[in-house]
Amino acid sequence: MPHSFGTRARTRHMFAKKFRQHGLPTLGQYQMPVKVGDYVDIFANPSIHKGMPHKHYHGRTGIVFNVTKSAVGVRVNKPVNGRIIEKRIHVRIEHIRKSKCQKEILARKVANEQAKVEAKETGVQVNLKRTPKLPKEGYFLAAAGSDGVITTIQPLPFSDLV
Image 1 (cartoon, helix red, strand yellow):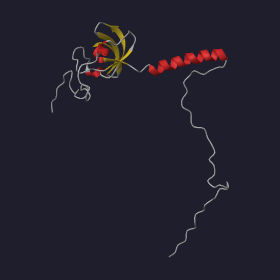
Image 2: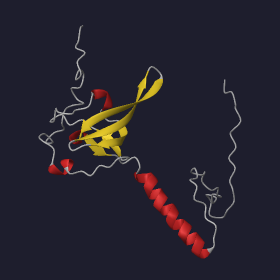
Image 3: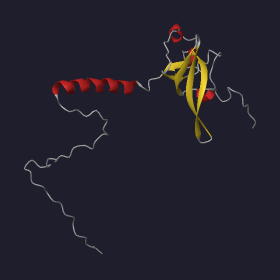
Image 4: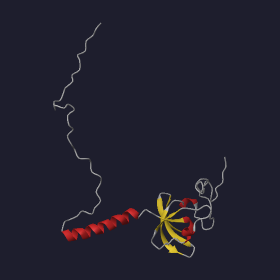
Protein backbone atom coordinates (compact mmCIF):
# COMPACT_ATOMS: atom_id res chain seq x y z
CA MET A 1 0.00 0.00 0.00
CA PRO A 2 1.50 3.39 -0.94
CA HIS A 3 2.31 5.87 1.78
CA SER A 4 3.69 9.38 2.05
CA PHE A 5 7.35 10.28 2.41
CA GLY A 6 6.93 13.79 3.89
CA THR A 7 9.13 15.38 6.55
CA ARG A 8 6.60 14.49 9.28
CA ALA A 9 5.64 11.09 7.89
CA ARG A 10 5.26 8.29 10.49
CA THR A 11 5.47 10.66 13.48
CA ARG A 12 2.01 9.98 14.92
CA HIS A 13 3.30 9.15 18.40
CA MET A 14 6.64 10.96 18.20
CA PHE A 15 5.07 14.40 17.72
CA ALA A 16 2.12 13.83 20.06
CA LYS A 17 1.93 15.38 23.52
CA LYS A 18 1.12 13.34 26.61
CA PHE A 19 -2.23 13.35 28.37
CA ARG A 20 -2.91 16.73 30.06
CA GLN A 21 0.40 18.12 28.75
CA HIS A 22 -1.04 19.91 25.71
CA GLY A 23 -0.53 23.60 25.00
CA LEU A 24 2.34 26.02 24.67
CA PRO A 25 5.66 25.69 26.52
CA THR A 26 6.24 27.58 29.77
CA LEU A 27 8.20 30.83 29.93
CA GLY A 28 11.04 29.02 31.70
CA GLN A 29 11.71 27.16 28.46
CA TYR A 30 12.44 30.47 26.72
CA GLN A 31 14.63 31.72 29.59
CA MET A 32 16.76 28.56 29.74
CA PRO A 33 20.45 29.55 29.85
CA VAL A 34 22.38 27.84 27.04
CA LYS A 35 26.09 28.34 26.42
CA VAL A 36 28.42 27.16 23.68
CA GLY A 37 29.75 23.71 24.59
CA ASP A 38 26.68 22.61 26.58
CA TYR A 39 25.19 19.17 25.98
CA VAL A 40 21.54 19.39 24.93
CA ASP A 41 18.84 16.88 23.99
CA ILE A 42 16.83 17.65 20.87
CA PHE A 43 13.23 16.97 21.73
CA ALA A 44 10.74 18.41 19.24
CA ASN A 45 7.79 20.23 20.79
CA PRO A 46 4.84 19.55 18.46
CA SER A 47 2.91 22.65 19.55
CA ILE A 48 5.60 24.92 18.05
CA HIS A 49 6.02 24.33 14.31
CA LYS A 50 8.65 27.03 13.74
CA GLY A 51 12.25 25.86 13.94
CA MET A 52 11.26 22.24 14.51
CA PRO A 53 14.06 19.76 13.78
CA HIS A 54 13.66 16.85 11.39
CA LYS A 55 12.19 13.69 12.94
CA HIS A 56 15.58 11.94 12.70
CA TYR A 57 17.09 14.28 15.30
CA HIS A 58 14.23 13.84 17.81
CA GLY A 59 15.72 12.39 21.00
CA ARG A 60 19.35 12.89 19.93
CA THR A 61 22.01 14.51 22.10
CA GLY A 62 24.34 17.14 20.70
CA ILE A 63 26.76 19.92 21.64
CA VAL A 64 25.87 23.61 21.26
CA PHE A 65 28.13 25.45 18.81
CA ASN A 66 26.10 28.65 18.26
CA VAL A 67 23.52 30.65 20.21
CA THR A 68 21.24 33.23 18.57
CA LYS A 69 18.36 35.23 20.06
CA SER A 70 15.72 32.55 19.44
CA ALA A 71 17.60 29.46 18.27
CA VAL A 72 20.56 27.25 19.10
CA GLY A 73 23.09 25.63 16.76
CA VAL A 74 23.74 21.99 17.70
CA ARG A 75 26.36 19.50 16.47
CA VAL A 76 24.76 16.04 16.17
CA ASN A 77 26.25 12.77 14.95
CA LYS A 78 24.23 11.06 12.22
CA PRO A 79 24.96 7.54 10.91
CA VAL A 80 24.86 7.47 7.09
CA ASN A 81 25.70 4.26 5.18
CA GLY A 82 27.97 2.85 7.86
CA ARG A 83 29.84 6.05 8.65
CA ILE A 84 29.07 8.78 11.18
CA ILE A 85 28.75 12.34 9.91
CA GLU A 86 28.71 15.36 12.23
CA LYS A 87 25.69 17.47 11.26
CA ARG A 88 25.28 21.10 12.31
CA ILE A 89 21.63 22.08 12.68
CA HIS A 90 19.88 25.14 14.08
CA VAL A 91 16.88 24.45 16.28
CA ARG A 92 14.63 26.87 18.14
CA ILE A 93 14.96 26.94 21.92
CA GLU A 94 11.51 25.35 22.41
CA HIS A 95 12.82 22.07 20.97
CA ILE A 96 15.89 21.86 23.25
CA ARG A 97 16.39 20.36 26.73
CA LYS A 98 19.48 20.46 28.92
CA SER A 99 21.06 17.00 28.78
CA LYS A 100 21.78 15.00 31.92
CA CYS A 101 24.41 12.84 30.21
CA GLN A 102 27.31 14.70 31.88
CA LYS A 103 25.77 14.83 35.37
CA GLU A 104 27.40 11.64 36.66
CA ILE A 105 30.80 12.54 35.17
CA LEU A 106 30.79 16.01 36.75
CA ALA A 107 29.74 14.60 40.15
CA ARG A 108 32.59 12.07 39.99
CA LYS A 109 35.00 14.86 39.06
CA VAL A 110 33.99 16.91 42.13
CA ALA A 111 34.27 13.85 44.39
CA ASN A 112 37.73 13.05 42.98
CA GLU A 113 38.97 16.60 43.62
CA GLN A 114 37.70 16.43 47.19
CA ALA A 115 39.37 13.02 47.69
CA LYS A 116 42.66 14.46 46.34
CA VAL A 117 42.57 17.30 48.86
CA GLU A 118 41.84 14.90 51.75
CA ALA A 119 44.62 12.55 50.59
CA LYS A 120 47.09 15.43 50.48
CA GLU A 121 46.16 16.48 54.03
CA THR A 122 46.33 12.97 55.54
CA GLY A 123 49.17 11.65 53.37
CA VAL A 124 47.26 8.47 52.46
CA GLN A 125 47.36 7.32 48.85
CA VAL A 126 43.88 7.13 47.30
CA ASN A 127 42.77 5.32 44.13
CA LEU A 128 40.57 7.59 41.96
CA LYS A 129 40.02 5.11 39.13
CA ARG A 130 36.68 3.47 38.56
CA THR A 131 36.71 -0.24 39.37
CA PRO A 132 34.27 -2.86 38.12
CA LYS A 133 31.90 -4.48 40.60
CA LEU A 134 33.79 -7.33 42.23
CA PRO A 135 32.31 -10.75 43.01
CA LYS A 136 30.84 -11.31 46.48
CA GLU A 137 33.09 -12.47 49.30
CA GLY A 138 33.03 -16.21 50.09
CA TYR A 139 31.70 -17.45 53.43
CA PHE A 140 30.98 -20.69 55.28
CA LEU A 141 27.38 -21.68 55.76
CA ALA A 142 26.44 -22.96 59.22
CA ALA A 143 25.30 -26.59 59.41
CA ALA A 144 21.55 -27.26 59.54
CA GLY A 145 21.67 -29.39 62.72
CA SER A 146 22.05 -27.71 66.07
CA ASP A 147 24.78 -30.18 67.18
CA GLY A 148 26.95 -29.42 64.16
CA VAL A 149 27.01 -33.03 62.86
CA ILE A 150 26.38 -33.44 59.15
CA THR A 151 23.82 -36.15 58.29
CA THR A 152 24.47 -38.16 55.13
CA ILE A 153 21.47 -39.62 53.30
CA GLN A 154 21.96 -42.72 51.10
CA PRO A 155 19.56 -43.92 48.40
CA LEU A 156 17.76 -47.27 48.86
CA PRO A 157 19.03 -50.11 46.67
CA PHE A 158 16.84 -51.03 43.70
CA SER A 159 14.78 -54.19 44.11
CA ASP A 160 12.67 -55.74 41.39
CA LEU A 161 9.38 -57.01 42.85
CA VAL A 162 8.25 -59.05 39.86
